[in-house]
Image (cartoon, rainbow, N blue to C red; front, side, top):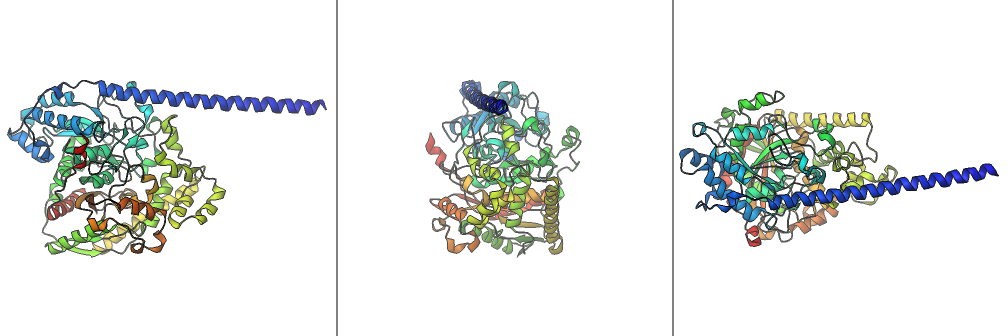
Length: 592
């Protein structure tokens, strides 16, 4: 009897102990989250209280914002414009349209620093490739005196301000570029929107009900509004190309490794992210023109790049490969990846560009036979990205902050008990069922991960074989299957971004060029136009996206094999010249 009583007391004491532990954990989590909210609020207060002396000055350069980065550089070099006046003009435009009372694209402002830097430019260094060009630098790229938050509140503490410039910023400054603002990003930088708990939500200047994309959404919105002529973003699944396409500007993702990422943050604990070795993040430009993207590449692929970071291969920008060649180019194209059927406007954009290229001498165009379709590549990207299980890297990197609701479908799928996965997958449609089966609660084994790497190798070999067998120079395809999404809806349309993820899986360079806008008769997404296995919840949400979408920009993308960055840019430029896209957003002007 005494033994039973002893066991009962032990059980009660043990239960009370566990209860105390859980209550203590709950209180610590709540305390931590409250602290992070205060950090975020203080960060915004400090930013808004900052005095910018430059904004008190005036300039007569009312139309300079319509110039491209290349044109600005030429006029500053020739003496037609002064770099300091250019800074004044763009600073005033940023303050007018980019702040929280506008599209909320800016996280930090360094107008006085840019003005001071413009005054110190050496006239004898006029050969510098970005001489006098204002630049926006993405929040995750090191800029002396700035925060690198990656959308994480824990990185918004004042003590975390960067002491040094990243390598890419050093190169930009050496070539006369003038960093002046930083654009907003998504929390953890893995969402096709630009929203976080520090700086809030950025909206699209074409339609303020919609998102500018992400994670480099702030940068693309600033370029679209002519608040800066050039922005520097990063891309691991489409974070340069998605916002560029949603905002009707040019975006370029180079071959991984060509541009140094030294001095950039990773939204993980201690900036450690092992999967980045398999699918690396890449720095790339967002600009009004392809020439501006090429000019950025010339600057950062200069000799200093290889001295500052010995891990970067010493391949300077190759002007011969960027120049127009008399040799015919053979381009393959596809209109659909088989996983997510594009809307009418996206399909039309590709076919119109194909027709224009066929009419031009020097191009051979043919539709490709898919070596791997979107069902395979999208799910492979998801499996590789979620291999650790339970979104562990995300939650650890947040250091106590809550994940945004935008991540909720991914979080639910990641935490679903494995024993229930076959049942849940069988009860829902094929595409969402495939996503449920692609992730595992608790992560996967080393052996399973090795098999995924073998699958990835097979995909890369298949696409390389396609290019070699058919002698293709590039692949043309829709940048995305839909125009800009309504804010907050990306969680219900995660499958739509298979088109950008392909280039990241392959480690190939890719760029997007705006070519058209959605027409009045293209504002639908009929079930009759899509394959039977895609008539599901994703398709229903795509149909909602197309409602009231007339006038939104549509882009096409050019994909090339590794280290053919210059050829990719050259083909993009040919398309840009053939199409001559001149539409600009106006919705943001009504926010004043």
